[in-house]
Length: 262
Image 1: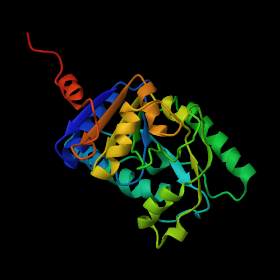
Image 2: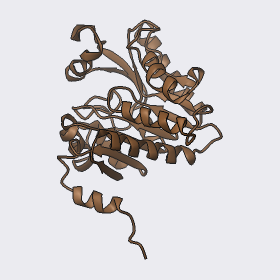
Image 3: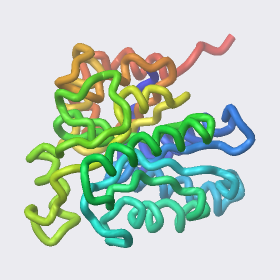
Image 4: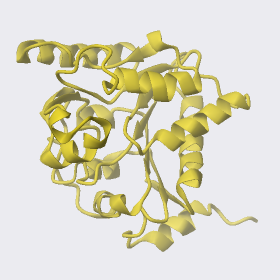
């Protein structure tokens, strides 16, 4: 696991964008597959990728996008549904074609249909050849995607209940807390771990406790993001505030400096 600490959020986003582009350059197939997170954490990263496109350093025309999760119960086209969010925050920013964006279908009406939608989504990811780079944020309670504390470490895409804390945190995107859906479809932790590279970006002191628990605590379902420790190619990009709780900070900084010059 590579941990990169930058002075501020913009620099953390730039480092995360570089890690994403490096991973996509080594994509397994002819059409790279990029896993997409929503929320506030990756917004700076998407803007940095947009700048790379504008400068001719990146091209997402042939890239497939795969969303981490989707709310259950929002009608198609709802502005806070994650398909619409990703169309605004990713497709229009980096030039990813909307028809190449895959999002779980949370609009179906009953549990059987949702379970079929989850299985179909796993099959869709497999048909694309798997995810080359998965972008991640981290919840203040340590959730990854919408895998809340207590999620099975080997879980696959499925229906999950959102915790009260996650719903409170996401209420800023809705008219009020009661308008936040109670359930979601989310890639499981096992699904996330199948990606060939994981790139997590976290900024702000509100994420410091979760980051420290995920990176330096035990591997546990109580902190779903601790599965980052289990992946062979994880890059974590933080600002100083999000890194404030790390005990091994000096080692991360020394490691990031690379080999000494001969």
